[in-house]
Image 1: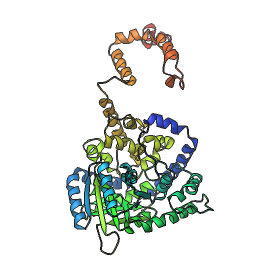
Image 2 (image 1 turned 180 degrees about the horizontal axis):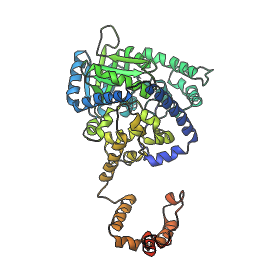
Image 3 (image 1 turned 45 degrees about the vertical axis):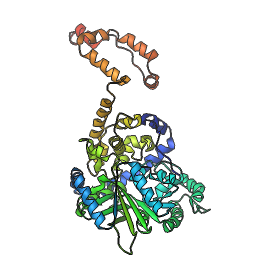
Image 4 (image 1 turned 135 degrees about the vertical axis):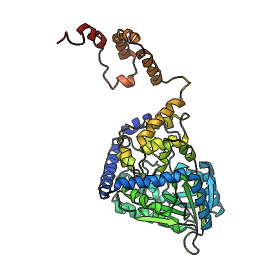
Length: 477
């Protein structure tokens, strides 16, 4: 039970459909407005916020510039701690590794901590093909999964749902997945959370295998870190006999003390809290305590491609706080589904093209244009990712990738304009045809443009003719 982003249309088409949903826009405006206000309050409490941003960015940048060394060091320390390290070049390899571990333990179901990277690789769908049910245990992810829906926000995947919709999903879908919702279920948040807790408890106690991602991986100590707000993550990390953690290679930091700025930046930027309610760390196996078999899958899946992009590699500093989503005027009006990816919003508009490459998929190529370039995303980013600059650079890459074939109308128009504006004589000749051209455009022009905009009448004379006739305006005075 979950949807898929495969086959999603390009952003303009998907955004147009989303904009017609007034309930969606209302839900998004309310939710993002609330989170924005909470973040602003707790960030204002930190006098050296800008210095903290610089420190967080420096920690991630140092690790990325020395990534090969740090990853080998991480493998060594994890192995010394009793974990088994796997390397996966892409989603298929990572999914195959996780499925083989689950099958080796005859697991027919697994419980999952909220993890963006496992959504990125489509792990739930891959496990389902192997006959293994993957249960999401984060409340918002559970809502998305039960509703056969798609996530629309990095931190709050069900942000597009209101309480009444969630109640209906629980009431109609929970029974098919396990413990049913209580008959007297209401749409009060505490009642909905209690129903989810009861539904998930039997899965926590029954599952042999738990699956997580990681917010950070410390090379120095071989420690993985997960931060969360509900406690479900700690249940997944401690109760099952086997733990599999799928970790993007960009999550590595060099030293334990590097966590200091990141663990101060992340909760304030994501949920508007001073610290995360649950911060779980684990370093391999501890006899008699927690999982006795730990696997770590280090995933590339396009990250080395992004690392090779001198402008775009800063996107790998992202700590998935989603602050950029909550301030983005485009995201607030279209929601996350329009981006066609588990990474929506401004960070998704750069991360998806960087991971997948441009020039071969219209949906991916449309994402760098899903922005007004207002700069609000950079202002709130806790690790100072200059998203507008990366967007502009990616737009240039998209244009370059399509050179040589049949030019698009925009490209043909720009070439025509360059030709005309290159010589004053050509411009003067074209000016005399302006009135005829406007009448032609009004009658035969693209209705997508003229249907929503007024096409003005052509002026009686050009500026050049007016200048000559009036001696630069002096004779009109």
